[in-house]
Length: 203
Image 1 (cartoon, rainbow, N blue to C red):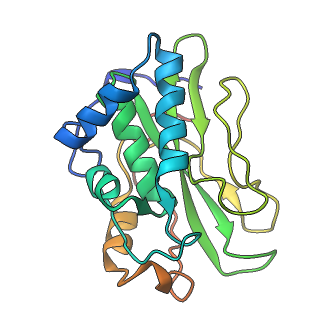
Image 2: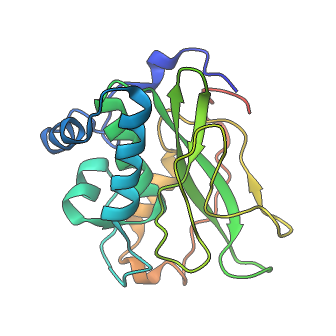
């Protein structure tokens, strides 16, 4: 897969606020001698240092990258926002991807799951999942050339949406901001089809 213009995947925004001073400072701390090592260090830091709110019974629902860094927790979406921001702050083109998965087991309800992608010379777009290995059965690593997404697509109604998004879907942001607490997610799982949005690439 290829992004038609990687420069589109470098900009700061309200949610991917890679120009925030806390994000910029952490990005500098994680910077390595080459792009691949920098990308890996950012991935591993977000995966291991930001607690997935459901795994750790945290009720905060941060949305932007800087909110997620400050809270130290978040859903997969928020962790992806932070990871993409750290990559962009280090000059690495980065984008977002999504899956539709069952919430628990082979039957509905469904929810959308978020992951991230980084552009690396020699590999192109590499999709990876920093939701955290704190849930049994999940083992995500940063291995360009071989994907380790947290969840396989295996049940009816599940899919990995084609393409990568430069910014998170507005519908997803609205749903996140409407959640009163992370613990209410199982009552009100976020299930959406990100239609009508500009894709940075078709997979």
